Image 1: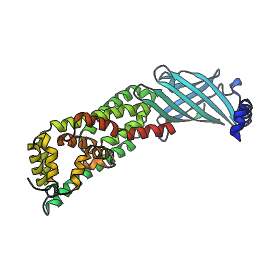
Image 2 (image 1 turned 45 degrees about the vertical axis):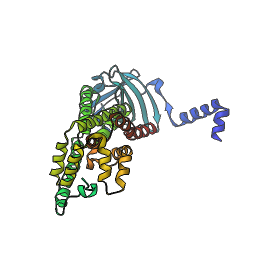
Image 3 (image 1 turned 120 degrees about the vertical axis):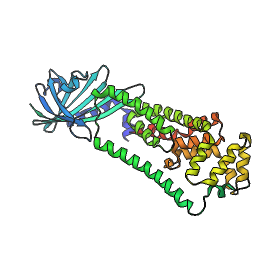
Image 4 (image 1 turned 30 degrees about the vertical axis):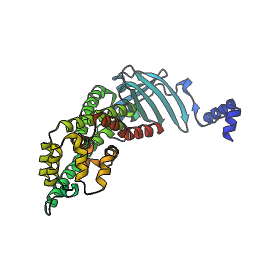
Length: 138
Length: 226
């Protein structure tokens, strides 16, 4: 039945999906509500312990990871939305020679918890690794 | 010359115990090597970060060279390293590892062809398989075009002519057999195939190209499903 609705009226189906998504998550990226926030904490590879310290910042609608900047992943625009009593954010950082870092995270009170995925396509192998970050507001 | 293969391969009486003990010692070494390497990797809890990219590239190249060497040498856990490499390197790495496997097995086969029979005879004698060693000596002394006939004549067991007839199929099965490290692994099997002089190089190459496909194909399929 759902399939036939999608076939007959794809526009209406998309609208319904968008409305449902809006009801669940409220996009607030236009206001950049996280601007001015700065979190410092530990980061490591998924499933493993602390590796080193990192600081993430939100300024002028852009997200930065100070440690990732050392490897050429510069600041990038972020999107943010509320989810219950927390903010969710997402950003994709690019590097000229090391691929991309896809960050997604949650900020609740003074704590930021995020995961990020490093993807780097090579001719002979592809890197696809996941990491975590947990920090406190500074 | 009218000895049967079955009786030739069988060492007498208590020699079995020594042969078995030596084979078990080899199996134990392989298992301990594998377990030790896994334990070490877990303990080190190595983390890979973008800052390590240059080291990663070097490590990958060294690992591929190491894999090629391990795969080509009999009784080495090459296939485990190959699987780990395929999982680590992703889809594109699967193709590279496949090509390395093909190269390694071809090298093993070539070495087997070049290896003088007396080296294998010495190894069989070390394992107390004296009759098998004697058979191999006779086999090596036989002209290559008469070797199939020689083996068929030696066989009291009726299955042996069929084994010789379906040797390519059997080789493909052995290369994919789980736990084949105990009978020499991919490198050992390819080397034995070369030593036997029963396989032509072009046919061996074509067969191995197809026989080692299932592993990489399965990994690629499972990666595309995820």
